[in-house]
Image (tube, rainbow, N blue to C red; front, top):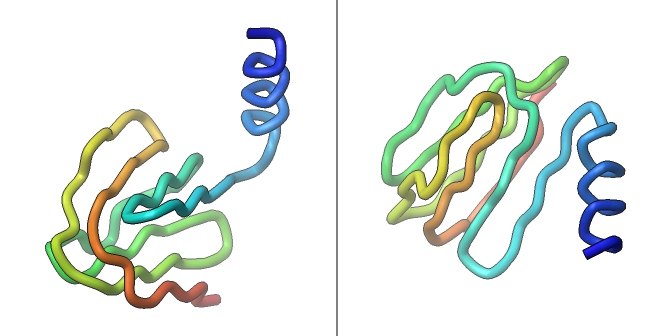
Length: 80
């Protein structure tokens, strides 16, 4: 459990972080959800926008400034 707490504390100290695995994407510390539908997601971050395209997107978990999305990710880009 000590390793888990160490990693969590390390990640929470970052300005933001994005985890991508299999068919999920986890974003911590986003500012706003600009667009959210089954084929496209746009999240406003501090200084840029994350654009994610694909299909079958659904929100699995939503908390203050943290989101977990499931679906088929085809393309992801960072827009200044």
